[in-house]
Image (cartoon, rainbow, N blue to C red; front, side, top):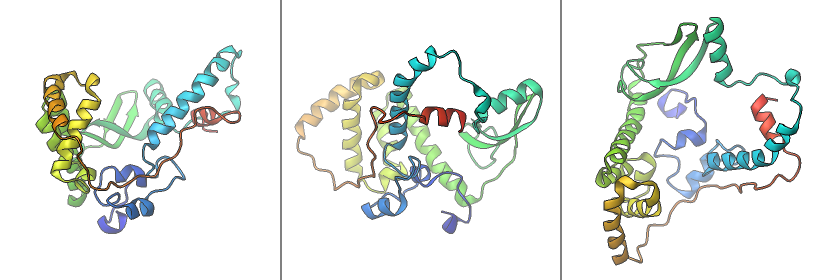
Length: 251
């Protein structure tokens, strides 16, 4: 992306590839651009795996922490996460510069005002002040707008229970559109709605009709799909786990 667009992306390969149509089209693409060295480097379901592992470790570790008289924090370093610095800035007035997720509101002038952005701002006793009037290069703004439009359609479809708009949103998703035909997208969304029916009450009346249609077409075959790289989720720790403490206290 840096080579082609002339601008550096702050996201990892894996995260950035979720928004672009060029790096997961084929099995060779996945091998070339993905790595299991870290969960953010393109691993399929990497974030889910890490969250599940943390949950599993907490189930085992947390009761033990509660039984302790207290953890001596003198040997721990402050985390690099924004949270404590934001609180410090608000309470003490010490200015803190960071990158924050906010409603755009003209912060980036060539993106929709109501979209959510991540951009530079300052926190102090006066609260959060974003640096306004930033203008992205045209090619970068175009990439962002593609995702914004897809997300806008998906949200509107979810709020209104609009199956057709949902399918159009999925159809225009950069990853989906790079590998799926429109017929495959329509079928895939139908299957997804049926599989997740209990969490999608706004689509209930449409799902009943979809079920009947799916029964008529039983042996539908998709084109050969591209498989992502996977890592097995650890259910129980093999040795004493310090991952939770390491990540929480930045050891």
